[in-house]
Image (cartoon, rainbow, N blue to C red; front, side, top):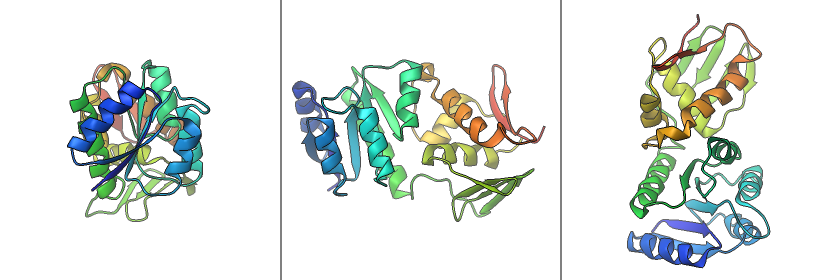
Length: 230
């Protein structure tokens, strides 16, 4: 049975989520504040963490950062009433794998939980290929070692950034819409108004393009994004 840690301080929400996920055959443990959440998550007993952002003692953003800094790599799903693009980007950039805005439908929560667990079972969700080495200009992606280099310099990417990059590089020269990228890199349908793809494209550009030439990630206005040399 898959074990989920729910870090949430609203008792009604806790009761609702725990009851529903238990009926879906998950084992759910609960922490009512950020510090307790860190202590429980650090034991390494859970397959997934559902993390509220507005928490007593320590907010969810800080909890997520601390867990990632402590090498806790299980999938983290944020629950947040702060659903502006900036707040969502802040949450994702802190190390979370997904988010769900409050109020939410339970069926969507279950879908996101299962998608995250499925990706984790596939080795973090990285895209597999018979050709394990991709080279475009001075960018090299080794899909065996999961390493990325630009001009010989090793570049650190999050799991989500890596999936997005591999999706782009496997489709070199092909314009991919936001829907294409969401389905390939996230394995789930997001609310497109959140601009999550745009946020992550910007992250990739800062890491891969800002200090290097030629620029590889291009916007095709009204259509999407493409990775190409010019």
